[in-house]
Image (cartoon, rainbow, N blue to C red; front, side):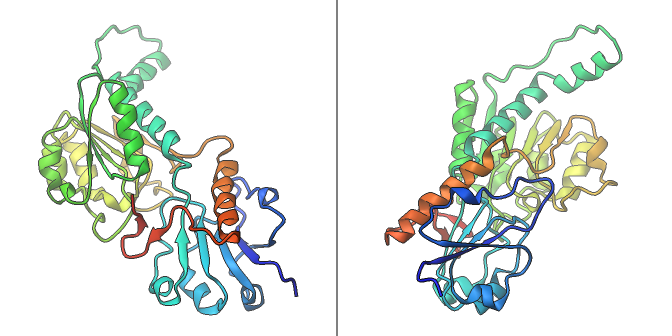
Length: 312
């Protein structure tokens, strides 16, 4: 039996995503790549679990079978699928990949908001039909935006918007208690929150009505944060002007969802943070923490299981 720590990497193959660059992991540990549910033998000596497979949702079962497991790292920012009582009961540390996606998600939000304000979808539609139709569009400068979520992604979005002269306000847990009042004061409402009991259904019909007929909704957090049926109705009757959505209640978005064909709606397949080479940067976060763990130092990006995210 090897005396070196064992790291299990859960990496179910996904044709849409790059495989984990395991060669970047330092040679101080034994790395075992697992496809599917790890066996009792694989878990027996494992001290570290790296969950590369974003679809994995049975951490509780793994923890009950892994006596030596002390640290779980997620190759994602959202960890709602992994939160379970066994984390606290077993004293297992959970970390995530916070920081990797901050800038690319903020860039996606800027692109979506600018596209809406500048009427890019309408321009492309006219171009496809060969129509030269002069018209004026809006200005982003001077708009008011509320970014719901004060984590690193939300802070980066607000920073980038402010550089374009948008009056961006960060909305945390306390302020989100009366989100309708917040929505009534802004032109753009951006959801960048993790999925927790407190954020499920946070943006409902009342909030959308307060956002108003010129309002624009962006969701780059988790789908169930928005009551999708209420959003569809609000878009259908013109309660709000449009939406840019990267996440949905059900993913992939069902083919019969009306969101696919609604005007002034951008449907993105949960890819706002993904960019060429993101898997290398994501592995870098884990490797940095792994070196800390081997030296007995405090890890970065420790998730509070009671909150469901990393404390700021």
